[in-house]
Length: 120
Image (cartoon, rainbow, N blue to C red):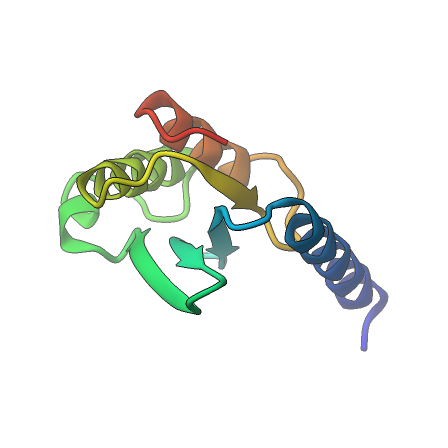
């Protein structure tokens, strides 16, 4: 395993452990990013279900994008997940960035979700 990958895994485990110890029964907004796309989902860890999800592959988001791997695309995905959460009656979540640094596309997704009323 490369050093970079092992550091990512350590950050991911540290972040997840911190979230699970401190959230209680709140919902979790989990983020995954690849080189081309970004995905997010709101998860209920108690029931082990995904309540809603969004990504740059969703037809509503995809039609308004110039490129799917950009900061602007991540912000639109954040707005979309916040709208879906509002429709499901969800307001408060805990942001789970995984092992990714809070920078660039991950930060943009979080700010987009916050701007549309999702609280974390």
